[in-house]
Image 1 (cartoon, one colour):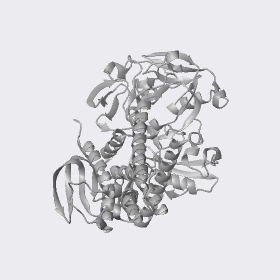
Image 2 (cartoon, one colour; image 1 turned 90 degrees about the vertical axis):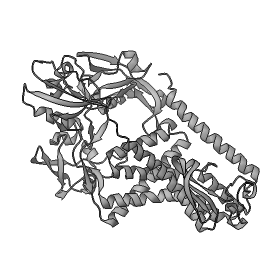
Image 3 (tube, one colour; image 1 turned 120 degrees about the vertical axis):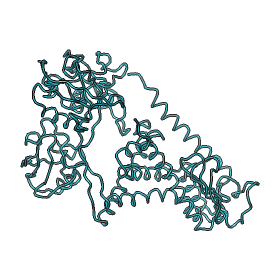
Image 4 (spheres, one colour; image 1 turned 180 degrees about the vertical axis):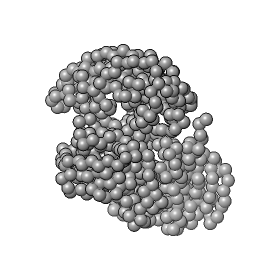
Amino acid sequence: MVSLLPYVAAGLAIAGLISFHEFGHFIVAKALGVYVRVFSLGFGGRMFGVRWGGTDYRVSWIPFGGYVRMAGGDPFAEGGAEPEDEEPVAHEQQFMSKPPWKRLLIVMAGPGFNLALPFALFTALGALGEPQPAAEIGKVEAGSTAEKAGIHVGDDIVSVDGHHVLSWYDLLDEFKASTSDVIALDLTRNGAAVHVDLPFVAPDPAEGDTTRDPYDYGLGVYCADSEIAVDDPKSPAGVAGLKTGDLVTAVNGTPLHTYHQLADALAAIPQGSGVEIGFKRQETASTVTFSDAGWTPAPQPGDDAVWTRWGIASIALTVDRVEPASAAAKAGMLPGDRVLAVDDTPVHAWYDLIKSVSETASGEGQAMTAHALTLTIRRDGLVQPIAITPDVVTDSDERGKYHTRARLGLAGAGIAVTGPSVSRVYPIGQAFTRACDQTWQLSTYIVDTLSHLVIGQRDPSKTLGGPGLIFGQLKQAAEQGILPLLRQIGILSISLGILNLVPIPILDGGQIFMYVAEWLRGRPLPQRVRERAQQIGIISVVLLLFGVMLMNYVKPPG
């Protein structure tokens, strides 16, 4: 049964964020002597409320957001003229009668409250116990320094150069602070203590690195989730009825959520014994029991011990989607194909495939070309080679930034997750400092993204998110608990505050621009100019939203 609680929490979070924004306008307006007619939680008709101090504090029927209605608060009306059916209010209490600097403070208070909220939320999270990924290795790149030193996926890092670490963030800090030629790691593996020395690896200036971090050594925190691929129907898993796309949730009743945990659990099952697998298929939970007896496969170099014994693999190297008219589609690739090797070199992660494709390219920009490569795949138990010459395209990455690159037109299945979480408690001073750093970093990232969007270096369909995306992010965070939800609220509050400062007339930023102009010229902008600015602002927003929808649903050929 699907729980409604995450949906309710996401809805309340959105309503709370917008209401907090409006409360900023409200409290500063009241403080500066503006008569506030209505402060509403929600939109639409009045459901219930109370009148106090001349203000109707109400809850309205549509429970998303809210608004503040001030006397003489229409900046596009001549002199802030009031509707005839409104109760008369003294001129000095009307919004438009206030000097420009007061109107600026009132308008800026909404975005200001949104930008102040993350400081409080992030500080509280740090002081109460910020959820952070544990210092557990989720990924070891093939051929990396870490692999050569003997580090395994699933290793728990206990200390770096003798300094105890609790979370992955501690690990990052210790790598950054290390000045020794060899980084000494103490870790635990299956309950046993292990010591590993990592030789010095210099940061790559081409990647913008100035200090060392675990990624320079081939270490990562993210790992494949427990969604599986069953690419041979004759395997024990295939005969039992498991299918590609099933999400394994337990082995013999023990819960799990990563492929590494699944592999360890299946490795512990005695040969020839049965195993009970709990799984979800399209949100429907089921169990199946089977054994590994009677199957003698012919494994390929890309197959691990779990596949060789059970016919189960991580879905991470399985094709989820083949774009029409792409190089992969023309070569005959299909959803469900599992990639085993590229040019006879085994692949271990989807990144290996992306890297191999990028290495086929030569030249730059419009002069770029790509040479053919051969993928070894398994489809319904049959291993076969497929030769593909990548397309050379100019498109945008996951952050919306444009690049010219070699491309097959394949999308991989599965998602990357972190392992266990730990609660990291900071002293209040350190928690506040971290909150300041996080808020500043997120703010500069959002501003940078918007600036690149304006000058055409970002794809709006991958940069901007509508209400559906925002709701989905909050729902996902709510499913993880109250602390992840509060962090996501803080992130969205920063976005809301900055976006409202964009100088589009129907946003706060547009009014700020007009009041600054009025302040500088000593009199209001002409009404005709204000009305035309409002029309341009509305048209701009509508065109932007239409453009994003068009790019999301109308895909170019090739």
